[in-house]
Image (cartoon, rainbow, N blue to C red; front, side, top):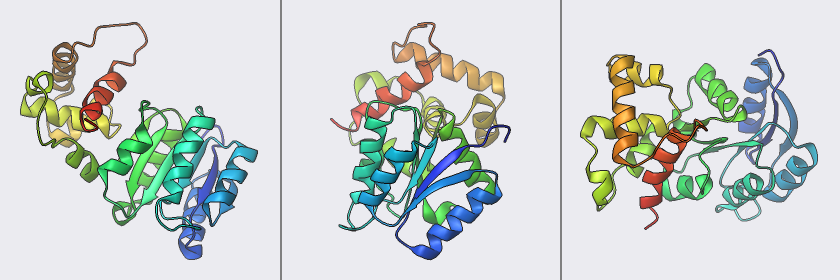
Length: 221
């Protein structure tokens, strides 16, 4: 990395926290704060204002969703900071609460699936730089609503696959690799998704974000 990315890590399991810190440090990140409970993490992160925070959901003192509460609070109070939740909870409702109304600078990764150090560090880096990184299994559950709204029903199965990959934070090239199709085909599907969801060109380049948020919004209804 050309510019050092500063990170705060919140995890109550000392061995796991040390492991995460070691992985990030070896990859060139600068870990500026560590915490074993939610209150300490909130205080330290607000004090140091790192580029990204890696947070466990089940932090003390409650061991319930205190870490998620802190993650949501940090996204509100430090909107330019990335937040990556690293958890064992395959829970779309947690991910949706974390995302809120902003699909930038956010990650939701399952501990059991973070086996590739390079991929994990790439996800953290992408979130720190304004992108997103969501676990595929969580996104898959989000993409299976009990009742598909009329507007979303216009999407084909392949377009939903592309939208799911977009939700994970993948680029067009990444989507093409994962779905075994050409980049040109991905671009056509993305254009079709924008058209069917009524998302016009606005000059901001945020149409991908709008598309994903448009879909996730239906999960809260």
